[in-house]
Image (cartoon, rainbow, N blue to C red):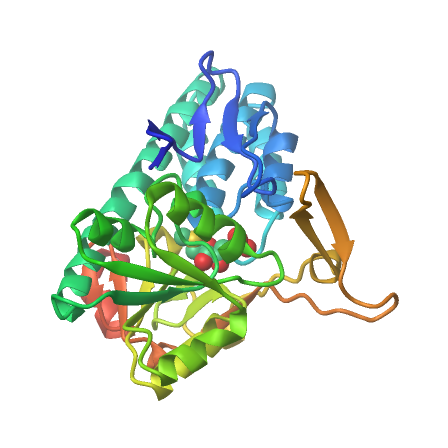
Length: 361
Ligand code: MRU
């Protein structure tokens, strides 16, 4: 997507190919800071500390991190150790494992002196594939919006967390259909859940919709049910960090509550799903997907901008109150109207996924 007219991705190789560059998303929306990752340790930290985040971008960053590791320790033991370090950074988004499995399987049969170069090219390929997948999801999602839109009134879409281009290499998953609808002159308006505790909606989704000029309104996380009861939401679209072969969707904490409200109000609830986010080894999302629990500080503190532009951190809970910080929840398939993949739309079910991805069974 473009920032002030300049096409920009979230991750790209440096001009001399010595590093991979990323946008530090912890500084958005107020500051635009680019960081250079030169080592495995830096790449692992960028995922763990959420300088980059969003399932597809985590996968692409892991691929580049693995390629950086291969420059220092290209032997089998070195690569397996790098796999472990990167894999341990975040437990829920399956794209991380998907990318690492692909990189390791590619590298091990190669002569040791060819691994680093080959892996660098593979990381670029994974990044490019992500862009193509998300663009295709955007096309299928646009077709759905065209079907649901009455041709006249503003079409209101609610989204949770950030599943836009900042969560991927480019385009985004849930937001790709919105960009394509906006570009096709459909009058879309987006309700943006702030998405506590890290505020990916308020700080990232709002930021990117703002860059593209898409009309949107940031709402407190608990507002969606009220809006749906009053006919103010035509469609919910969210992303996913892991989808099971039976169609259960694990996404940012709070997604499940939006799905319940959508179900009760007969608002279509859709999930934009790139195929690398499907975990074919898992059927029951509630029982089988590991849910990340993060530092209490994400809940107890908030960062923001003061009137004079300085960034400050403030504490919002009383000293000593215990905190639980679950990062994700699982929305059962029965609450999901459609999954939108790069191959088209399907029911959130084993049968629906099987029809679109027969080779993966
Ligand atoms: O904790 P985050 O910010 O990595 O969580 C991101 C999400 O939950 C997204 O909705 C998901 O990764 C899909 S991104 C296209």
